[in-house]
Image (cartoon, rainbow, N blue to C red; front, side, top):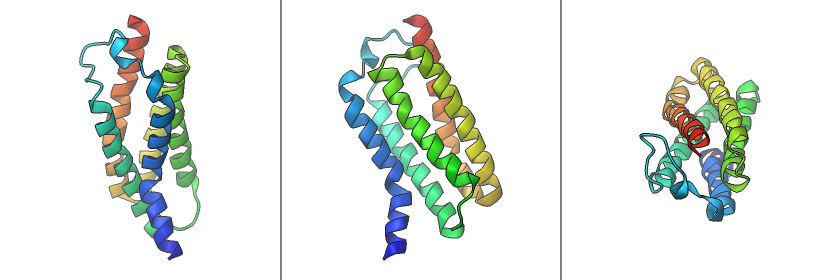
Length: 151
């Protein structure tokens, strides 16, 4: 039973974190009122994309933890990048610290690249499952910089 609870935690913790962040920042999201760079998606796309990405994150970590029980730098990177990801929403939307959000998302980019690199040596499928996440946050980096410059 303990193993099942652990597996459920690994699978759904990113979704839980994303849901908590969304709950706290929902009334501060000013995306529609901002001047956005070219290719900025509509607001409705973000919760759909993040739900899928959080599920991929959870699946990737679940697959890794099924095979590797011991703690490693990979575990640390996974939780740190999830924390950095979560805090970005507060920085950008709640606190409106747009320049700090640029620096913060650049840190997230680096952490996710390192996470994928570590996954490649332990569980390749977990690395591949995080490629859409990396792609999305690189796009989010472009949007963050563009919104800062245009506003």
